[in-house]
Length: 239
Image 1 (cartoon, helix red, strand yellow):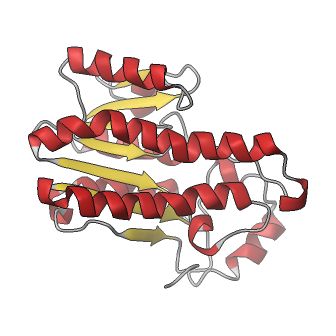
Image 2 (tube, rainbow, N blue to C red):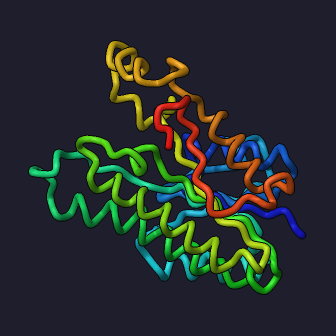
């Protein structure tokens, strides 16, 4: 089976680090982002492919599928990582704050997976890895929209695992906790210390911690793991 991976939201943070790790494992890496970027330069792999993709646009996703199919580059591994936040207390949350987050994080997940699942079914092989968040498991003040979208991702992944397991397609979730990325830069040092008090390992995680878990779930070593949610959070949330 060809080692081709599609990573959405690959221009920075967890997505970028996952792309880098997949490249080191010999994968042909295709990364997407809403804006222009050069994935090859970012991960040091001239063969990497950068694609501008709008998760809100079915046409954009349809065109990506057609382009990759014409180049015989349909992925056997799909990492649904792209997502946005529009944080606000629920009583102050605007309709568009809710709509945009659900449209991107949840409906975008549906559109991308729907587009690329049929070749996996035909080939009787596939790895779907959806990047949720500890906020989707335990909730978080000011993130009703984001937490809802990430929680729904878990149900999506488990249901897909039950439907596609007989086709040798696994569907799993990685739920990062507090990770040192752009999404946690709004916290100052004192706030990070306070948050860390609730983490058994007493520190934030790194993008490498999450990327290694993602690559593991795509590997042969994880071929009997499906329908699972793995929290990479230093023990913040246990269930």
